Amino acid sequence: MSVTKDFDAKVLSLLEPKIQLVPTDRGAIYLVGPIKLPINLYDETYEFKWYCWLNCREVTEDFGSILAKLSSVNLAEMQQSSVLVHGDFESAEHALIRFHSICHTGDIFGSKRCDCGYQLKQSLKHIAEHGTGALFYLANHEGRGIGLFSKALAYILQENGYDTVDANLKLGFVDDSRNYGDAIQVLRTLRTKPVTLITNNPRKLDALKKAGLDVEKRVQLWGDVSEFNEKYLKTKVERSGHFRESDGCCNND
Image 1 (cartoon, helix red, strand yellow):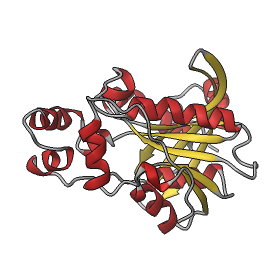
Image 2 (tube, helix red, strand yellow):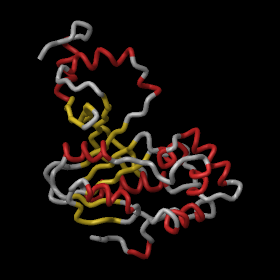
Image 3 (cartoon, helix red, strand yellow):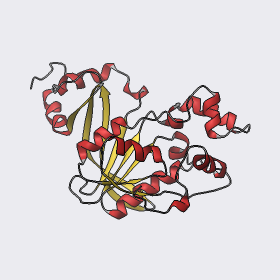
């Protein structure tokens, strides 16, 4: 493999073993990891392995040429997705996975307008207690795909009587434009055995099944209901088709 003159050969020798090329129909995903990442969950520390990925139209195993270009691209202004892996994710017979959409307000600020922050921490806790699994933290999914600024506009509409679905529609968006293709590609790279999906969202389940992945179970994730998100959660079920809590904790459908 050639080494790009603009990139330090010693540094490349440290990075190269941690980079995988995952071809896609639009170019390639460059998957970096695993990286040790201790995670604090409810005052307990669990050891996870962290991967991050970058979409690129250029497809090459000359990773030095890709790395040499990073400083000329302002990646800080671009979102990248990542995945936290716990246990022997590749080989274990049973593993939990969660496709979690980025939520700036819920995950970072702890907003009670949604249940995202709760679902993030609870999913990681389920995975850690189970012993094996992975949480995919998906960029470009803010506000079900409309972005953070548009989400702020949608919140204003919601404060004036619109539900989450109509707020998105009135701004000219569809209810949910999220795509799980890249996450599925990375999942295939990390594991080939069946998975149990943590979700209340049938679209996530359908995306995995349509891609030909073996989903042996679904685990529901309801909780943290309050006066602030009761309407939001009701809309998820009644208008976005999410499974109801009464559908049970495990479902093979």
